Image (cartoon, rainbow, N blue to C red; front, side):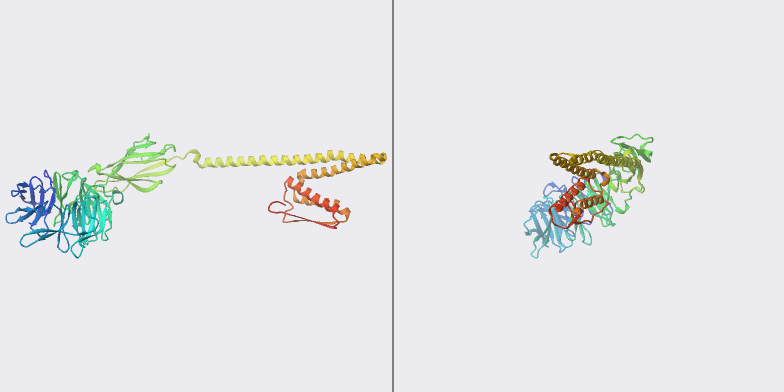
Length: 589
């Protein structure tokens, strides 16, 4: 690397050497091996002006004339000097040669075809652009091997034209949002075109599909790129405002070279790059230039070792028995489950360019690209076992083989342990059992009460009513004629009350809750009511389980309905057969 001069452009001059343009000192001429030849003066007495060459100097391939802004220059090989010829009617913003050999010149206000006669006359013919989209303030122009013309303007877009048979240009495609494109590189097979500019690095395939490479998908830093230079291994060398980068288009990784690697500085200039025939790359900028062969670049081979410096729990320093640098495992309570880690890479060739990636096995198995920031944070980790891993890469992209690991155990809270679940299950089962036992005891208590009530009614009230009926009948025998009717009525009421009481006692008695008890009671009543009248009867229950228990109210209501129907049939019908069918329906019996 050379320092002290600011180079704005490198180009192959008409003498076959490499010309390096310096604004104040002229043009330094070197051989392809970097040996100085001489210095060309940039002062032209014809116009009494020194051309600083801060804008591009164009020499069409194989020609001895060139352009700088609105100046026409010629190379005098005998005197080894540039000769000023004349002022041009336009300011040159770019120049390219089509596959057919036509030289196209981009001016600030249009695209022109250069005509050069054998007599040395130069003229510019304006090209017709058959498109409603017209370029504004052209910045650069390029022609690929298939005849596509690429025009970059100050509206941060790239316009792609093709030549017509009449010599004009027709728009094929407009690519918006490209930034200011300045440098083009086409692969020898014509399959893709790389474009460098303020918007980054743009890739255009054979079908004119364009994509700007970015840091997340392509691992290419976002920057302004001033050049794109291929090497023999297919890599791209990119000069930028952040140093010199080598980008591998297959592996999608970039290596950045900075002043610590031998560069003159960070800032390069647009146009100050050149790929010599011997494979060496020339790149210049503010403060010097660098000449190197890509095959001679040896990356730092040392793998960086990762070291933890600080560990935080719930954003507070975690107190551990050992220092974070030698810690191999963590055992922490469940309420300190927000963990943060700070780590460094022990590789000091360019510490600021070291990069990291990390992951938490057991929580997220995918690597997280951390860039140059050695920090990771995980919030609200569930209880369990984890392994925190960190990998580091040095400034040349060499990654550590084995990750730095930290085993982490977050204790399970008592309310999430198996024995707590077992206790809860046992307690729940106990409560359910107690509730079931309580309901069972209450049901048994009600049944015992029903049996007791039915027994008391039968024994006490039944005895009184029976005695009353018998006393009435005895008194009726000896009573005067006028009182016999009353005593007979009293006896009938007593016996009717006894019958009703027996029905009530039967309904209350918990020992009579089954369907078969209802059927027996129904048959008993039919025999008492229909038998003396010579009426035959049939009682059937279809689709019902005789052992099935019936609720007290349903059993009583069924019996009373049946009793009323049989009594009416016995008293008011002249039939000799009664058929009773009991069956279950969707809404009842």
